[in-house]
Image (tube, rainbow, N blue to C red):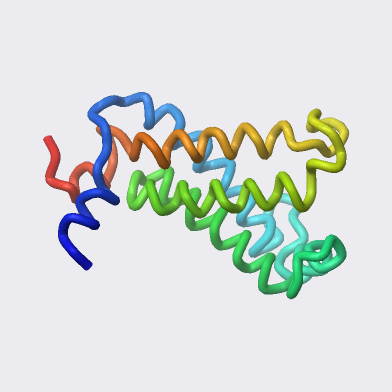
Length: 147
């Protein structure tokens, strides 16, 4: 890989606003990923989540649950620690688009009816971090050698 590509992936703005977005959104994604992967926090684990995914046409369900759970859990950790935020945010944005269109869009907008409101907010936060990068207080900034 070229040094220019790595530099572009790690590049970030100098502000601290991304930190205010990265930490809570990262924690939310870690928790949701842990539900899918490990059954923590009242989740169904890979087996249960895989069965649900298969029932809505995301096949093979177990593999799709593994991919979604890994994107959310490890992507969320990346946001919290500010490392490889742009690639993590891209994966999380993609996962939220799938969630919106495969699970929530048919239930309307509002989250209390199972709608896409919450997934849309997480999608918007992920896209924001994809565009801005990790911000001043991040591992990405240190790796990029920015001051």
